[in-house]
Amino acid sequence: MSLSRLTLAQFRSWPRLDLPLDGRPVAIFGANGSGKTNILEAVSMLSPGRGLRGATPGDQARQGVGAGWRVRAEMGGRMVETGAAPGEPRGVMIDEKAAPQSTLGSLARIIWLVPAMDRLWTDAPEGRRRFLDRLTLSFEPGHAEAALTYDKAMRERNRLLRDEVGDPGWYRALEAQMAEAGATVTANRLAALSRIAGAQEAGDPQDFPAAVLSLLPGEGFANDPDPQALAIRLADGRRRDLAAGRTLIGPHRADLGAVWGPQDMPAALASTGEQKALLLSLILANARALAGETVVLLLDEVAAHLDAGRRAALHARICALPAQSLLTGTGRELFEALEGRAAMVEVEKLEGASRARVE
Image 1: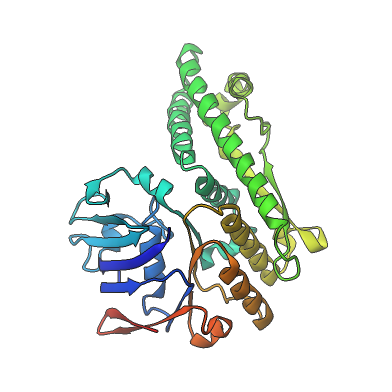
Image 2 (image 1 turned 135 degrees about the vertical axis):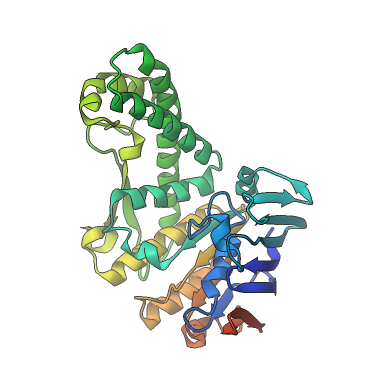
């Protein structure tokens, strides 16, 4: 099952786009600001959440907050639609019937890599946690619900801590919720890393070597997917948490560790090109590990920091993946190795509106 047609209406720079898809990779090229990434963002809205830019529905409407937008896709004989009416939250329709956003996660596993993620290994742990949870969500659509349950209970506990509430009775129920949901979050993350590691071993190590991945627990917390153990640690840490005014241990403090395989070097110390190759290695492994599912891979400006050899190697792997891939770049020459094997889409912006020419 794959995307066979994508239609946009009043989304970002696109008044309208009708893009037929035949399962081949799609290479989208054009000048900066022409609307290439907007196509990828529209596809990312066919998954739960705010998409690859993390934008609110009002920011995605072509004519501003007071307008609306729509994304429709034919997917394995099913019609999937999402959009926002003027001033309304985003809705989802599947086969003309309203559906919750969470349903999208079971229809297709949409994975993306965008230029902002190039700094993943040197930025704060929060970004790596988001990246890890996005990978995890591709394997376990219910992961988002567990993470939201944990975060909601933690916010309530933090409010008690800030108010300096000392009665343990107020904490027990919240800590029980955090322990159950947090143990699920940790178990899901560990399972995702295991599947990624297994899929990396199947890849060619020459251009995109495997990384050694780990879930770093954060100070005072072990990555133990046992709710009782987490509940005990939360209870034992109340005095310290009261002094800090916030919860200091738990899955919300975890970090994603990665060691660049060929040189046994922490990812943060690798070169810019090696860090990019490492990210691509993980994304490719993610797609391979999802064989049997409907997988859509969105790669925005992936040619950055890659030499011609690595670009050709990447395109060969993309063609071999059990996934539907959409890539963007500033020029057609960046996709030379895909000529004859991919749909070519040239994008330009005229009079403030994006237009496309499909080959």
